[in-house]
Image (cartoon, rainbow, N blue to C red; front, side):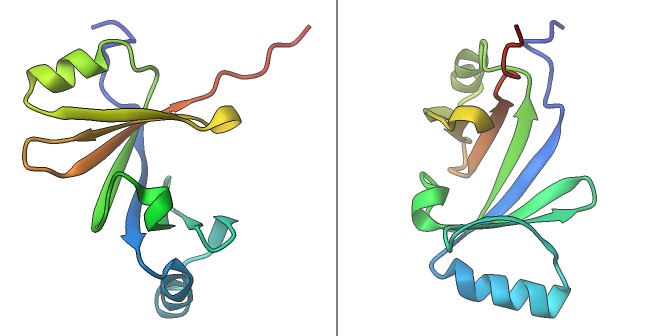
Amino acid sequence: MSAATAGPRRLQNVYVASEQPQQLHAFYTAALGLQLKFNDGDRWFQYGVGNTNVSLACREEAAPAVSGLVMVFEVDGFEGAQERIAAAGGQVLGVRDMGSHGAVLSLRDPEGNIVQLFRRAPPPATT
């Protein structure tokens, strides 16, 4: 199996699509003691838990998910992913370029669950 068709490197993130992520942030920090690792205003709250991330996302950040949990798998690349997803009965929903963070390919599994593949951006070229 080539690097392009290898399975995910790791579970990169699991996030909750939320109507009120600020309120959930207050809950998870108080109730579970989660330590904030990163946030984007009141749109995204990310916590480090072990060697993965757990996050809260506003509906706009979570799109195309509208509710529930989303698993995000880190991959080396998207080459051939769209074809494999379709052949296995899934649906590719699109790719979102996040600039220096990388890119996310969103898909729907055969039961309708949203899953994302995350590809890190290549490091900046040095001269």
